[in-house]
Image 1 (spheres, rainbow, N blue to C red):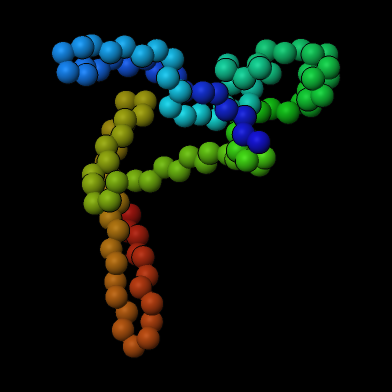
Image 2: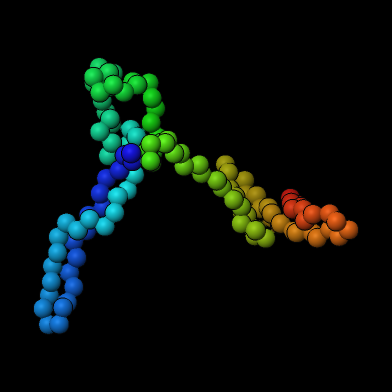
Length: 117
């Protein structure tokens, strides 16, 4: 069971000299995040949530795909070997983040060494 909405498109294409138009063609399904503005639970009162057999304190923010809750985790990764310039309250700061792989011999594994200068 996946909580999703259909993806529908309108297309136009040529077949020889004839222009063909097709509307409302389903090309897939897109999962809907619970409690988002596209969710049926959005803006419901505690009473309405109880009538729908849903938990009123559930914050949402996750997807249901094949019967399992899925969460998107955001990860920020700094650019490698780049100068990063930041400004905060009129103070300008520059930093360099470098990543270097060093190969160790004699049976040791590769290690990631991170320098901050």
